[in-house]
Amino acid sequence: MTDNTNEIQKVAINDIGTEEDFIKAVDSTIKNFDDGDLVEGTVVKIDHDEVLLDIGYKTEGVIPSRELSIKKDVDPDDVVEVGDTVEALVITKEDKEGRLILSKKRAQYERAWGDVEKIKEADGVVEGTVIEAVKGGLIVDIGLRGFLPASLVEMRRVRDLAPYIGQTIQAKILELDKNRNNVVLSRRQYLEETQSEVRETFLSQLKKGQIREGVISSIVNFGAFVDLGGVDGLIHVSELSWKHIDHPSEVVKVGDKVTVEVLDVDLDRERISLSLKSTQEDPWQRFARTHVPGQIVKGKVTKIVQFGAFISVDDGIEGLVHISELANRHVENPETVVKPGDEVFVKVIDVDLDRRRISLSLKQATDSVDPASEDFDPALYGMPAEYDENGNYKYPEGFDPETNEWIEGFEQQREEWEAQYAAAHDLWEEHKVFAAKQAELAAASAEADGVTEEAPAEVEEVSNYSSAPASEGTLAADDQLAALREQLLSENN
Image 1 (cartoon, rainbow, N blue to C red):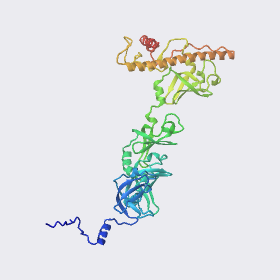
Image 2 (cartoon, rainbow, N blue to C red; image 1 turned 180 degrees about the horizontal axis):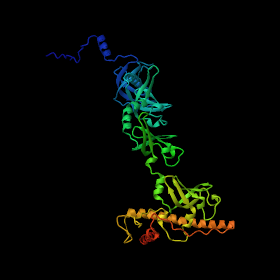
Image 3 (cartoon, one colour; image 1 turned 60 degrees about the vertical axis):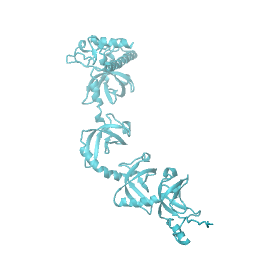
Image 4 (cartoon, helix red, strand yellow; image 1 turned 90 degrees about the vertical axis):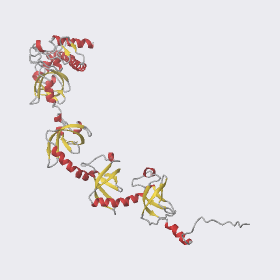
C-alpha cells in the first residue's frame, strides 16, 4: 500500500523574523506624532457634536464641533462631509477617556498665520468672507478671525454693517500680533490703492458741464454724495432743488438713480461738485413757457403783506396780487378780501423771468368771467394753443379742420387733446363758481359798509396767446374749433 501521509501546505512565510521583529514592523505602520503636530486624515463619521477622523493611528481622532471652524455654533455637516481630507492639529494624544483629540480650527489657524505673515511682509492683500458684524466693525474669515473696523470698511464710514455679512472682500493687513491673537484689516486702504489710478483717470476725463448718471450713496446735512461709478461727487443742498429745502432727504434717498451736471472738478483736492437741479427745468422758465399774460390760474394764498397778497400758483412759484388788484373797491387791509390758505383764481398780468416776479390780479380774474355764461375759451385756462404768423389757430396734429374729424391713426393725440380740454373746462367751471361767490361777498361787504360798490368797468377782452384780433385767433371765436369743442362735449354727455 502506498503511504498517504498528508503534508500540510504552507500558506504564509515568515519573512520578518522573530516575534519581536513582527511587533516592530506593526508599530512602524502607525504614525508617530506629538501634541501640537499637524496631521492629515479622512472624515469617516459625522455626529451632531463631533467628527471622527482616520489619520492612520491605532484609534480614530475626534474633532469636537467647537474645534471645527472659527465660526461660532456651526453644524458639523455644514463644515465637512464623509470622505473629506482634513488637516488637523493634535490637541492631546490621549485624554482621560483615552481619545485622540484634534482641532481643524487650530490647524487652519497655524497654517493661516504663516500665510498671513508672508502676505504682511510682502505688503499684499488678503481675501476672506465676512462672518460676523460686531460692535465697532466686522469679523472676516481669512483663516484667522480678522477684525475690520467700521471706519475702514469703505472710503467713508458705514453706519449699517449687516449687508456685508456673507460678502467676500479684499483688504490690507494693518496689524498682526500672534501673541495677542490680533489681526486688524483695512478695506479702505485697499480701495484707496486700487482706485487711485482709476480715480485719477476718471477725474481727468470729467469736465465741467458734463451730464452724468449716478446713484445716491449717502446723505449728510449739507448735501448728498453721488457714486458716479467708483468715484463720488457732492451735490450741495443748494443744488438739489429749485425750491428751498431744509434737508437733502426731502429730495433724494440712498439708492436713488439721478442725472446730474458736473459743476466743478478740483483735481488737486480730488473733489467733484455736482448739481441735480440744473438737469431739471427751472420752474420759473417752465411757468413762463406755459403761462402768458391774460391767462387764468388757480392758486393758494401763502402770505398777506401790507401792500397785497402772495399767491402760490405752481410748485415753488409765487406771484403778487397788489392791493389795488384785490377787489373793485378800495381796500385798506388785504385780509378783508383774502386770508392765508384761501384758494383763489387770479389773472396773470405779467411774468418777469429775469427778476423772477409774477404780477397777478384777483379783481380782473373775477371780472373776466360771467358765472351764467357758456362762452368757454380753453386757452385761457391752461390748454396749450399755437398760432401761425398770421394769428390763425394751429389745429392739433391729427385733426382735419375741413371735416371737423380726427384722422384715423392719431388716437393718442386725440386722447391727449381731449384730456387737456377737459382739465381746462373743469378749471373754467370752478372759476365761475368762485366768481359767483366773490360777487356775493362783495355785495355783502358793500351792504355792511353802507356804501354802493363801484360799478366794475366793462369786462375787458382777455388777451390770448396771439396778438391777433379775437375774431380771428381765439379758440372761442373760431367756428371750426367751436365745432370740435361741441363734438367733444356731446361725446362726453
